[in-house]
Every structure is written in C-alpha cells, then in structure tokens.
Image (cartoon, rainbow, N blue to C red; front, side, top):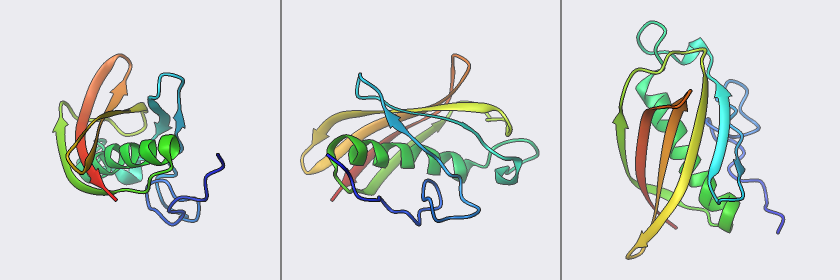
Length: 130
C-alpha cells in the first residue's frame, strides 16, 4: 500500500521544514520502527545537552509514525509519559525505536526509546486516538 505524504510540514519529520529535525524512520521486519540520527547542537538546552522538549518530540514522533507507516492510521497524541534516564549529549548518533503496545479501550498505545550504544537514555509511553 502506497501511503500519501504524512504531515509534511511537521517540525520533527516533515520534508517541507527547513530548520526541522528531519527525522526519517523505517519499519523493521519485527514491526519495530527504527531511526538513526545525529542531532545538531542548535537543539541543546543546557550546554551540550539535548533539550528535553526535543527529546519529547522525537519520542512522540516515532510512535505516531509507527502507526502511520505500519497501519496507515493518522493519530493524535492524547497522553505522553516520558522518563529521562540521563542527559543526551548533542552531536552523538542516537537510535530511536518504537513498538506498538496493545490498545486500551478506544486508545492506541505505543512505547519508544532513545538509545546511544547499548544504553537507553530516554523512553516514553504514549496514548493516541484518531
């Protein structure tokens, strides 16, 4: 199934946003969404540390894109719970993974992580609806 362009003006993953994050993802055979990025220092909060709002954006965007890329469903975030395990240094290559969880009532649910090396630096659980 060929999917139409999905929120192409999105700051996080839209192709029309000049100074956005330019996140691009793929869905792996195990149905996990995967992305690998080097985030520029212009998105730092404290010196050399990735801003928490950017971390939240990356985690949220990965889960939203997972549902769209896997099932063609356009969802909006209802609830986002984030655990910042440790500061993420800017300029490092980060791995982003997202996986669907079982739905709860009329909500879709997913989890995502930001990983550097073999260590989880931040993770999120999100609830979404059409």
